[in-house]
Amino acid sequence: MWSVGEVVEAVRGVPLRIERQTFPDVSTDSRDIGEGELFVPITGKTFDGHLFIDAAYERSHGGALCEKGRKDILNGVKGTVILVEDTTQALLDMARYKRMRTKGTFVALTGSNGKTTTKEILARIIGGVHPVHYNEKNYNNLIGVSKSILAIKGAPEFFIFELGTNSRGEIKQLAKVTEPDVSLITNINPSHLQGLGDLEGVLEEKLDLFYLTKEGGKVLVNADDPYLLPRYKDKGHDLKTFAIVNEADFRLTIDEDLGWDGYIFTINFSGDSVKARTNLLGRHNLYNILSACSVAYAVGIDTIRIGEGVEKFSPYSMRFRPVRSPKGHIIVDDSYNANPSSMEWAISTLSTLPCSGKRVAIVGDMKELGEKTSYYHKELGRFLKKSGVDQIMLIGDEVKETFAELEEGRARLFESKPSLIDYVKKHLSDGDVVLVKGSRAAKMEEIVEALI
Image (tube, rainbow, N blue to C red):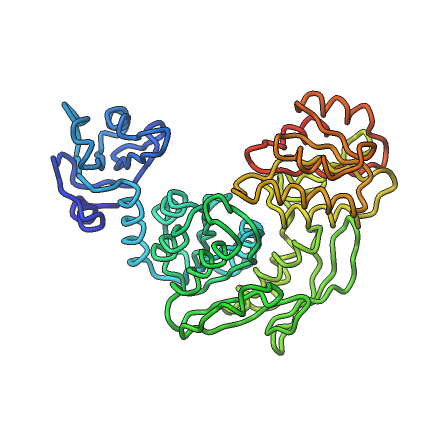
């Protein structure tokens, strides 16, 4: 519940008119706003929520924020109206206001790859012991994280937030809002270069999370990442490292590779240890598991409960999830997103998984790579050429650069999804394994659905 006074204090706003004194919740969507809720009209490059202030009031009979520069739109408007400089910043300010008045342990994590899976595993582990609140799916941007904080109900003891970025300064903003007690960076790889410039820009952006973690808070660093430890400057945090290859405070060892059934592994925690089994596939997922387990141990979760949480976690749609078709082939659905490193990890895993037929990679464009777009798509072609993949199907504009690096008999470039799907269906055989991967914009899940 928000009072008008609390809203004004949080957003440093100016009341234009007051009709309702309290609001049970906050909404940014005029289509599903609830009774009495406060509407925050978000403005973007192609939309302006201010155009829906009237519609929001008709559904909620509550109130709205409005940017001072858009006062002209308020003729005849009803309900409580509070003027602010910027509605997106106001949403962040309200989230920070609520965070500062919420007791519990706040965990924030970011990284180029593995954020969502790590967060979901960690939520499963901690949620088996304590009440936990976390941002759903990958709602990890300025709007998503703010709304997730504002949606906190009851009295959770732990709060887990995945923080994402595609432009400089966003992690700093999100870290200020969440003010984490514990933070983790999964890895540093080329991603969102269109907004972050280069790998150095990615590193600087992600490191802001560590620097804005509470003084004396816990910071967990991937010791196998070549960039993080050399650049991290101690800010009075309790630093713990984790790794699979290098020496670290927390270290994972593979006991048995079970092929399509996952892994049996042991994690040593400076004296304690846990042995567990996972059905997640790929070495990259072992890093996600290790990341989550390291945070869980650092916040005091017993090793037995850590192992139980990992074993209860299963892969979900579009995140390197194997789907067995009634026709006898296996589709590895990794269609959610792609950048150069995640693409290489997926292809490497495909090359090592048991296969009695052909290994097939269906690859779409990798977006948001800026000036490095051509370079990384050519590198992908060279990587595929050396891989154990038998057939390579490419679709998109950027992967034309990839196709140019490959032998024509082994690779095919398609102009449309229907033509690709038709070709693959005709040539799939019993025992084939098919990886489907590309950036979110490519909507590669449409191919997955057609091939199952």
